[in-house]
Image (cartoon, rainbow, N blue to C red; front, top):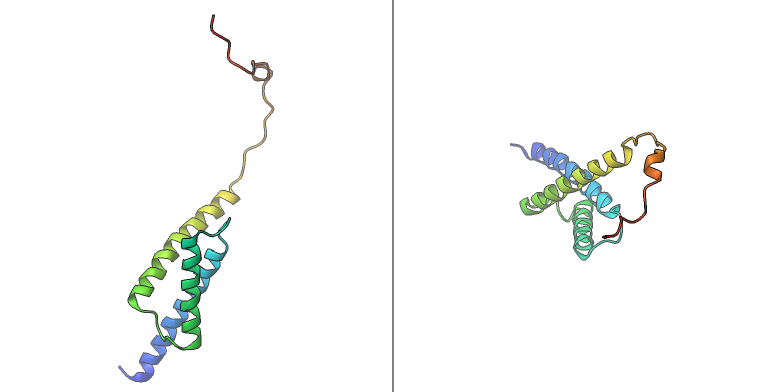
Length: 112
């Protein structure tokens, strides 16, 4: 394999990593509520990885970093899809409560 071919494959590999890193950072940052300590550390780790690849300090992520990125990507993308499906789900028509059900006592009857 020539160095030119390897350089172009490294560049393509790095582009896919950058896209996935950016998406994971965006998904971690958009988590609802306050970030837990674990999520804050994950966000910091992925931002550091992104900065190192963007600045050229790293040409590729290591196998362990790549596996970690893929695992978090899978988990976050599934939860994002689930959240999107839940928020876009159509709710049924509102129906008036029948008179029979409106007339029920507030407390169950006492013991005799």
